[in-house]
Image 1 (cartoon, rainbow, N blue to C red):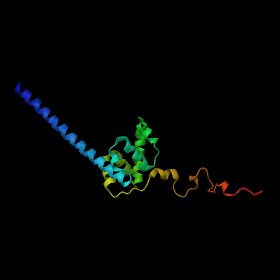
Image 2: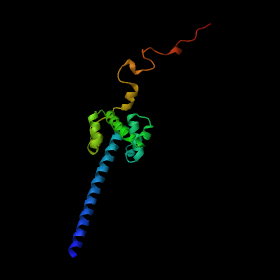
Image 3: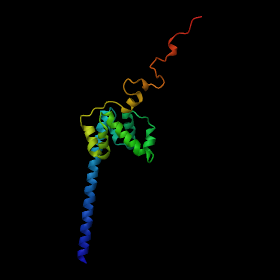
Image 4: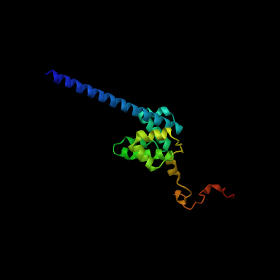
Length: 162
């Protein structure tokens, strides 16, 4: 009977040590992620402390990539948040001049790729979503209201003098 008590307490001690080590590991990963996001925000000219505040850090990310604040709604709704979260992550990597492969890394191995983005040589190039709003290159089809690239300014000529 005494042996069973010994084994039960040894199992409980092992379980407590395992949970403690797991908690310390998760805490280290969390501190690394916050520090990395802090550096990414500072590179983009935003306050680094915003990485600590849960919804505010998403607002700052939306400002970094140049998307409207309505995206907060899409990021909070179930099912659409997955699509918009991946899209936001892609726009973050594009804003720092990275490719879609880096986006996959940010999603699947975020504890490795966020520190690369934050502490690495990546420079903030500007909001990537603004590029999509203004169009790419000198394409005449980028201006849907002015398809022939003619200056559409009818008020440039003064009214005729009678």
